[in-house]
Image (spheres, rainbow, N blue to C red):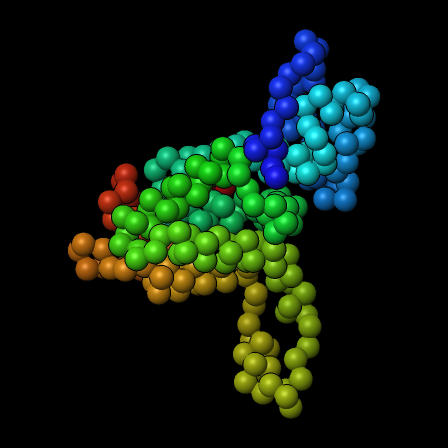
Length: 236
């Protein structure tokens, strides 16, 4: 059960503000990772007794739920993309958000996001996929989400991948390609997203398909057909 399924009513006039809890939880997760988030740590950062937090949350799982949704709410690039971006641009914004907050991928892997901001994201993805002609928008939204989350999770390993040797006797082609390859996590993400969108979405009414899930200066794609305006690229 998530925080959103069982919110506690405010029973005391001076109960701790949920927004304050969210902000401190996000800050602790950004600084210390998932192991650093505890009821005691948040209470200490708010200068209150741990018991005070239990007037608003039931467990540390509630803190994860609140932090996950708050971090997405405060990401202005994602919020703008939810308003008017194409699906490729929205996925780029989400990818960069997850990379900026590595703990988010770990939390999503254990708890289905059900906060209002993640629900708006899911709704927007399904809407854009349906407009693009997807036969099963929900399944394709899941596939896209899993790809984005996985890509963000492994983004930090790009540099170590280049330095790790490959046995050419076992994998000669891979070794040759690896030797001349310069890893770029975002370029790899772009390539994979482009391939995934091309194969999982049907042609638009004009007969075009997703052509380019690129970052800045991207052109309009078939995925954006029927959405508000051209591709709106996440700004950094």
